Amino acid sequence: QVQLVESGGGLVQAGGSLRLSCAASRSIFSINNMDWYRQAPGKQRELVAGITSGGMTNYGDFVKGRFTISRDNAKNTVYLQMNSLKPEDTAVYYCNAVYRDFLYWGQGTQVTVSS
Image 1: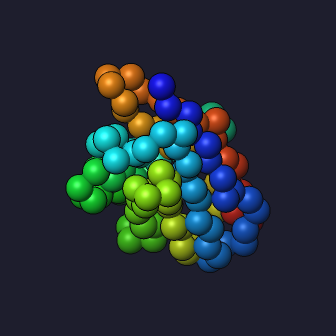
Image 2: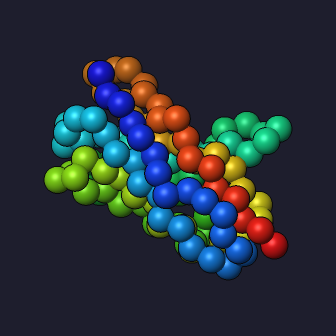
Image 3: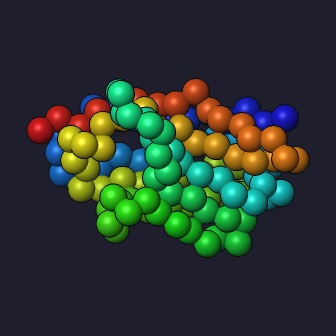
């Protein structure tokens, strides 16, 4: 079993930055894919970014070079650095991980970008 706890969300003005953290309750060394998703009110949850244990990354098309995902296996934490934030980035951001064929989600952290 894995518990995931997101943090780092908040209120920021358009053009600003935030760094989200996703701390896992166990070593993430053996967890291959870890992803960030987001869900805005009335919209489906969508992939923001993903990272493999080998450091390969992928991003949603809307990111367009503004966000960077990284992982620190020593700290059991995955990060999402978000720059040049836009009001349309407002959403609850969730991280997830697949461990032993089970998909785990965190509780989410709210990001609000004001115009």
